[in-house]
Length: 495
Image 1 (cartoon, rainbow, N blue to C red):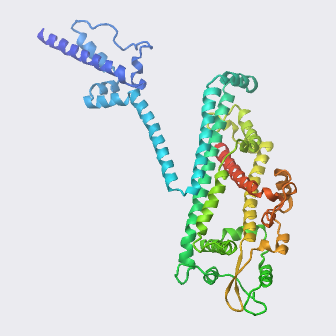
Image 2 (cartoon, helix red, strand yellow; image 1 turned 45 degrees about the vertical axis):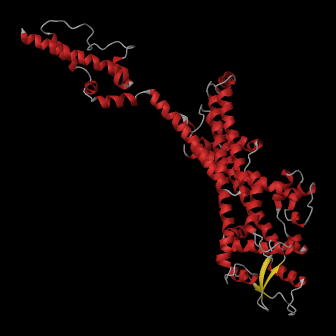
Image 3 (cartoon, rainbow, N blue to C red; image 1 turned 60 degrees about the vertical axis):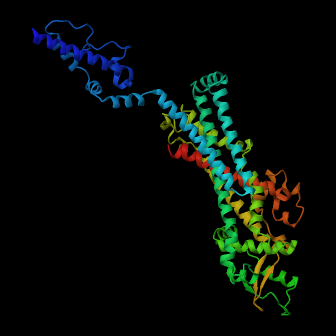
């Protein structure tokens, strides 16, 4: 009798312990561990539903029922208290909500510190460029907020959903298309600013190197001043007879004759290759040649720093070059609409959709989508090369020419080529179809805004509008290239 009582007490203690642990499991275990205890489901047949009896066979029956519990539950019942506390904390939703919000705050702090460090370490001439880029990023963020509160999740959502269901057959398709296109616009904008930032950094680095390169590579005698002879020797300039009459004095006529003989006849490709293959020393030499011209023409002191001057001018013009006007997106709308129609016609929104594979191959198999894409890619490449060639050609016309006189061996600085009427009249920076394009996009170009001086004549069909036109041309060309790369890679190639 005593032995049966002990067995009963042991069985009761085990059942009580099991009930306590099962309550804890139901309260804190994830759904995968406690689904079998859910109150919304009927209890399995093997789970005890009646109170234990006090019969002699009750203890063996209880032990049999406990043996049928899942092993994971029995393992939780034997865990140490410390491990149970950690398990409970890690499965508390409040913890993960706090961690998520802390991560967002940390990203905001990192963003502010990064902007502060960039502004403090950037020359004053370039600070407006940083401000312009931040303003554009803020504008893209406002568009996202407007779409999420007014369009996709706001009062216009029902109207757009009804239109999507009536004309596209799916209520959510057009709403998701809005979100995808905004994401695409945002990605293109951010990448454009990254590219612009890289260009700013590269140019600043090159400008900052000019003074150092001049002192180390060009100042042969180490007196801190680069003479024309030192410059000519370092750059290995052409040697020619300039003083044709041998009187020891270089007249303007002798300089003009020498300049005509040095006029290069590079074609489109050769000019681009020659410019890209220039060394840092050669570029520094060009800047010093320009400095000599400026000093002589405007009677500036010898302390004039050409690198600081270039940095200031660069910053003033680049501020407008990184701005994205809303009308910038208009030329890209037809191409993106064609590309996106391939997805929408198959109930696909973008490459991130679960059924994105249904559109695979149709971008290349559909001629009215494939050929415009190739056209825009070729246009982007040609446009960029033309901008590069035109700026290079005009730079060559503006720079003085440094030569070494074959008679006395002295360096001579010839005037810029554009000052010679014959050379300027033979120069054409708007060949063939490019002249028509410049006149068309500038509302007449030189016909409505004729050049006001010899300098503006170098820009060909653009005329007096050259400054704004080619600043915008380089900006739009870069933006178009970035947009095509982003769409082609994220929506077609990666799929």
